[in-house]
Image 1 (cartoon, rainbow, N blue to C red):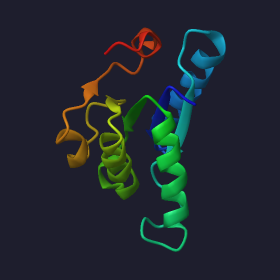
Image 2 (image 1 turned 135 degrees about the vertical axis):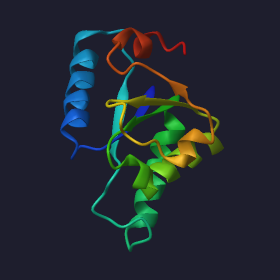
Image 3 (image 1 turned 180 degrees about the vertical axis):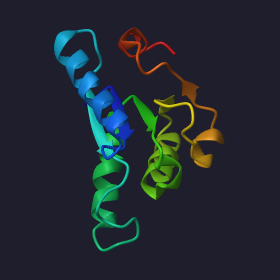
Image 4 (image 1 turned 90 degrees about the vertical axis):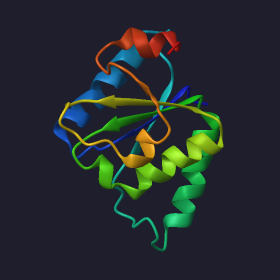
Length: 132
């Protein structure tokens, strides 16, 4: 079980470096939450042949997590996968967190509709404490 399910876009260099920073924090600090990651833009189409199997796996991971953190990158607002993860987290009554790595990035409408807890992604204490 992970404490934090993270939706991010590895093609974005800033998001990828943030991913690496989170992995480092996890290894260095025993109090840091366990995390699992999901790529926002999969090679599989949202409605494609393999979509149902991917959704089942993601739903399991979201159910096992306590919170969903959406890392907002340049293309996040266009990701059907991200919208689906947000809706699934809300259905499962999970806390949704959001973080912009660049203030010019556009937030997905599905995220704005639920009023997530906005966090400073560069402050490990925020995630480690789990109180938001």
